[in-house]
Length: 256
Ligand SMILES: Nc1ncnc2c1ncn2[C@@H]1O[C@H](COP(=O)(O)OP(=O)(O)O)[C@@H](O)[C@H]1O
Ligand SMILES: [Mg+2]
Image 1 (cartoon, helix red, strand yellow):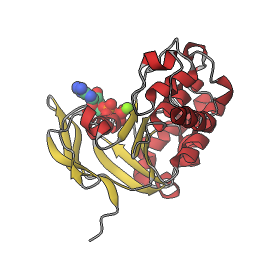
Image 2 (cartoon, protein in one colour):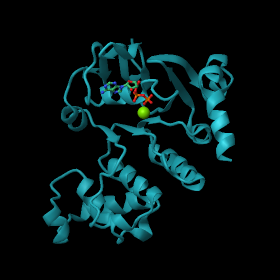
Image 3 (cartoon, rainbow, N blue to C red):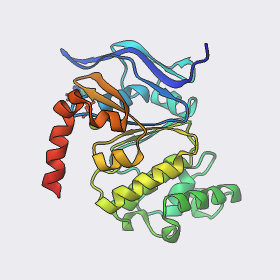
């Protein structure tokens, strides 16, 4: 049988003390899919991303990527051998380097800080940098220092730094946190542009953003998958509305 999934988990569970953050999760993503993961705070979304990227080890269950059992492998192996890339919350930029220099350093290959400073970045890398700059809308700001960027622009630069590594699967955990409405919309467009057949996993709670980008959505609740399907179906799922969307809608009203 042909397996269409690039990533899947089998009865994946993790326990912190006597609390189960994830319990018997069978989660599967098709190659080339843009999957959005939603759910209330504490549902286990970040824990799932931590497990996939090797940051934490499961208590039981398995994780497969591209047909390989990656359960318990180190973050380094999962990133470098399996090309699973993740954008972390928090600053990962070289503040006193330019936007373009940050991208050059993130590009695969031997680009040391020294080489970038001495303008010895290979031409092929510079071309890649320009491509990515266009996609993340920072072409005009390529010469700016990272510390001069707005919050939204910094997030885009980090997405670009992930992009330039050409990962097979890209994981973004709440990429629009702290962004304005316009920046959130731009981020949605960017993620769709960047997809190009790549598998992307996005954890998000901005429902407007979810509607903008999502085809399929997985809803987590209390460490389990509560529902999964097209966004139109999810928004009308009674369980999802009860445990999650009702409170999100109240939040949206409060924000408005
Ligand atoms: N390292 C940890 N030690 C103890 N509890 C944790 C740890 N990481 C996460 N948790 C708990 O697991 C639950 C799920 O957390 P998390 O995956 O971050 O949720 P989400 O991202 O869906 O908001 C939360 O109740 C959280 O407090
Ligand atoms: Mg989280």
